[in-house]
Length: 103
Image: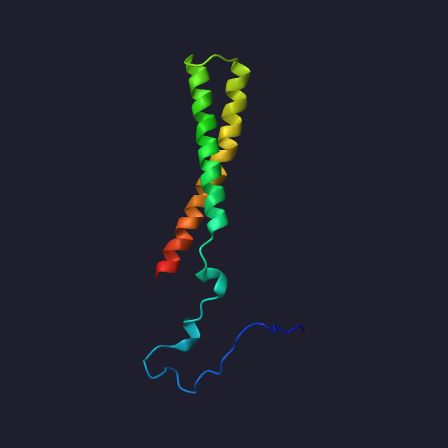
């Protein structure tokens, strides 16, 4: 069985609660949860802008405001959806992480 060497453990008191009436077993927050995921937020915003611009382009081509073929409409629509959906999911995840960090 392997052991983790870089995890800072401390000895818990024999009583259930400390002096300030807080149970120390449930107050541990790891370092990755304390940092803001800037790379994920930047990638989510980039994909969101790319997907929405591709969706707008496909809409403008399909309505006749821009010149283009119907095959371009379907291609841009597919690529726009492909970029837009993961971006929304990543942005929802980033907002959830930021909310958890505030509490």
